[in-house]
Length: 182
Image 1: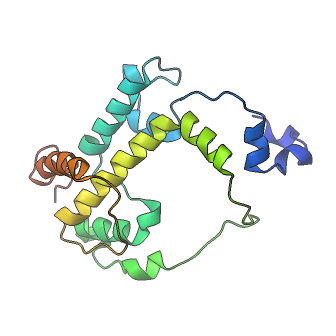
Image 2: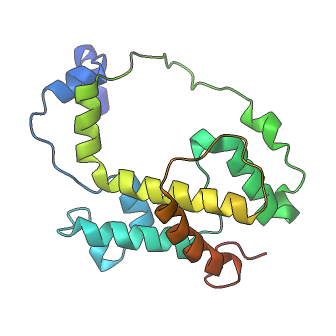
Image 3: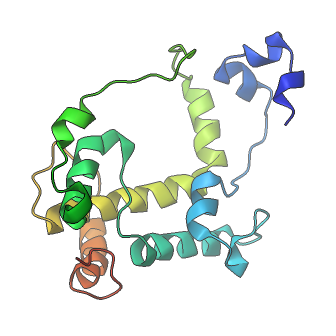
């Protein structure tokens, strides 16, 4: 979009006002799904089969990335980074850096979105939420595999999810696809 041509009225709308205009939202691959899916044939921005795009994104997360952090688990993310790349990040003081609070210049904290807006966002970005939930579960498994005591309580999923993720990540840690090779 040509943001410089947008009016101040448009730019000062709340997220609730923006989503109030959208009556029907449908699932679409968002930035997270698109980024981790990549350029495979199932991954086009107009992918007809979102299920395949999500599956490819999950497979890539598991098999192609040494480290993917989670912003709301920033300290744990830095601890894992320090563990898997000790030569570069071994002296990292994760608790110090995780405690730094920064807000981009010129931004202000707005009102939280309404439940109706959150429901529309969740519906529109359902594929991204699925990829995120998988990335978070995989990350939490890697925290345990590295023997790191989590800084934040991370129990969000069922035992079945843990077992499935643990079996995939265990092969990674053991030298399978290389997700945690040292």
